[in-house]
Amino acid sequence: MVGTDDSAFSGLDLATLIRNKYGRSYDVQLIKKEFLGRNLLALNVMWKYMEQRSFPLTEEEYILRLDDVANTLKCWGAVSHIRNSLAKLKERPRIGKAVSIFIDMDESGGRANEWIYK
Image 1 (cartoon, rainbow, N blue to C red):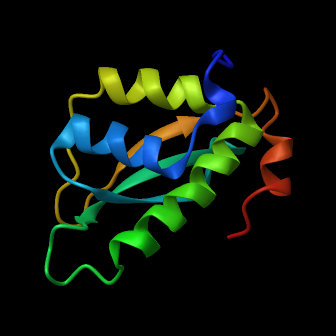
Image 2 (cartoon, rainbow, N blue to C red):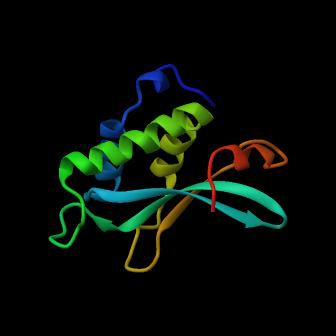
């Protein structure tokens, strides 16, 4: 699951992936969801994007936020999974509806509690 270039993955790389996929700089969030008794982690591509006047972050703050997310994805070994999933997705974020890319940390979902608090 870990690619050869994953160790250099940064917020700028994540921003570029999102911009290349959707044509906009969408915000992202890492979330934890419980589904059928399992804790799953997900990267949500949100509907707000940096090119909107009402977007609450500057470009620098946006990249710093994505740096945090990229570092977490590297720790999880999920960078290749996110790259591949983004390439295959057909859905787009729209108002009130994020696009979720689920990340299964392990079969039990137990390690998810180490990373995200809800």
